[in-house]
Length: 235
Image (cartoon, rainbow, N blue to C red; front, side):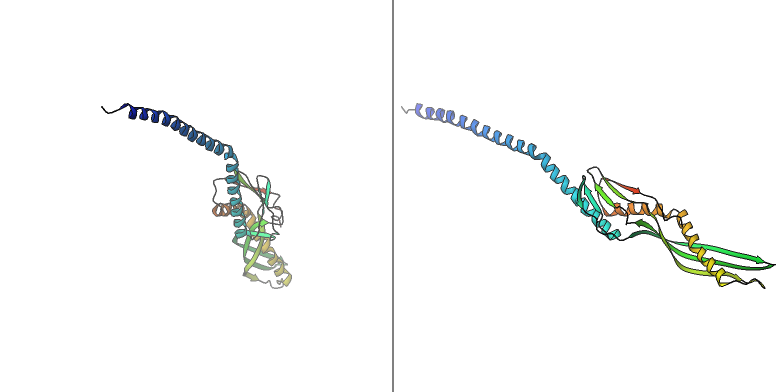
C-alpha cells in the first residue's frame, strides 16, 4: 500500500514556512509605504515653499517684462519683502495716454471808438503719464501684487496747428505783433487746463492698470498705490 503520509507532511511543513515569510514581506512593504508617506509629509512644506517661490519669481519676471515693454525700464521688485530685482536708471517720464485737444480764444480791444479783434483756434496733443524720477517699486506677495508709483499727471501739451479765425484791425487801433504773440501764448494754457479738467491723468492711471493686467496672467489681486501729488497740473 503506497505511503501517503510523507507528501502530506511535506505540504503542511511548506505551509508553515510560507505563511511567516508572507507576513514578513507584507510587514516590510507596509513599513516602506509608511516611510515614504512620512518623508513626503515631512518634506511637503519645503517642497511647497520651493514651488511657491518659483511661481512668485516667474511672476516677478513677467512684471519686469511688462514694464520693459510699457516703459522701457526695470522697476525695483521685492518678493515677500526680499529684494528680487533692483531698479535700473529709468527714463524720466512714461507717457501712457495721448489725446487731441482743441481750444479757441478771442481778443477784442476798443480804443476811442476803434476796435481790433483776433480769434484763434488751436489744436494740441496732450500727453498724460508718470514722472518716473520718483519712486517706482513692485512688491509681490502670496495673495496680492502691490505696485507703488507716483500719481499720473499731465506731462505736456504739444501744438499741432493754429488757425486764425478772425484778424480785424480798427481804423486807428491796429493789431500789433505783441497782441498776436500774447494771444498765441494763451492757447497752450487753455489746452492744458482743458486736458486736466477732462480727467486725462485719472484715465492714464486706469489705462496703466489695464495694460499691466493684460500682460501678466495671475489670479492675485493687482493693486496700484499712487503716491505724491500731481504738481504739474496747475500751470
